Image (cartoon, rainbow, N blue to C red; front, side, top):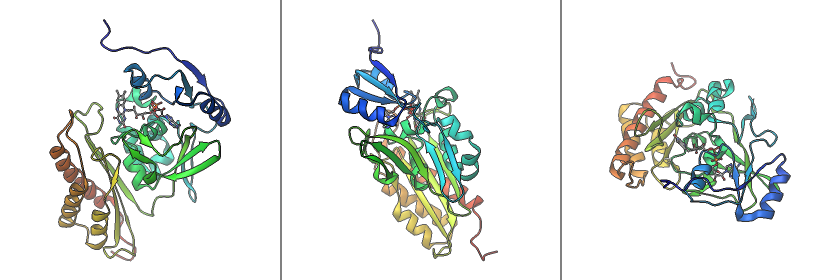
Length: 301
Ligand SMILES: Cc1cc2nc3c(=O)[nH]c(=O)nc-3n(C[C@H](O)[C@H](O)[C@H](O)COP(=O)(O)OP(=O)(O)OC[C@H]3O[C@@H](n4cnc5c(N)ncnc54)[C@H](O)[C@@H]3O)c2cc1C
């Protein structure tokens, strides 16, 4: 007897144009599922969580696997760009290293060859590794549907675990990131149950940059993964950091504020108390690491 049900049969279409996807989704409705690398979808089909009659492969749509960088416009990452592509692309490594770190933290090398950034975000798991960096880098999701294309700020994209604002018939074609603030430095810290590649029990993305308009001379953005139904920014900690000089005491207080903002659950991978404690630890570590590499504000020594 099989321990698991195995893959049921379904029809498969490799879509060639966005129009073809719109038409297929209109024809098949909830019987159709979209697929990129399939590392989430095929597991769910195997486990019987979803039973599509049709799987529509989006990876071969024009531009879906492209990474474009322009100094003025920023970065556009096709939704079907894999984690390994993202982690190694010279422009991503040079200008958005936080995103490269997060992509490189996903599971194992073979899985990163299939897993895509679009699939990671559309799957809407609270522990998706590319989500916290996308928050602090002000990512925007490019959504295609019968009415054409629109952009949604990442902070408005998630509705809860497994839920996004995508309406029936809509799909994601790219993620756009504006130019990073000048002299910014970022860190992605992820805690899993092992170092061989595991889903995050807690993850923290920190971005810091000099900003003369902040009383402290710096601004920091902090996003927490896997400790709430959707990724959390921590405005209280960010405000605190903008008003107090960088240093051990300031960072410890900001880490306390981050831990207080988290609303983690107990599950098989960790207790809520442990998760909250680890938010504190990782936030403090992330702030220290960013502060060590951030440039001094203009005009200071
Ligand atoms: C062994 C293992 C380890 C893993 N480890 C990690 C990890 O460490 N970190 C992590 O974050 N994740 C991890 N994952 C989860 C998974 O690999 C990632 O979420 C991956 O990025 C999903 O991308 P994909 O291209 O395979 O998505 P798919 O499985 O193809 O799609 C995921 C979901 O998004 C929908 N979808 C896909 N593309 C679109 C689109 N363009 N528009 C709208 N909806 C779309 C699909 O219908 C599906 O519901 C792991 C999975 C496995 C099996």
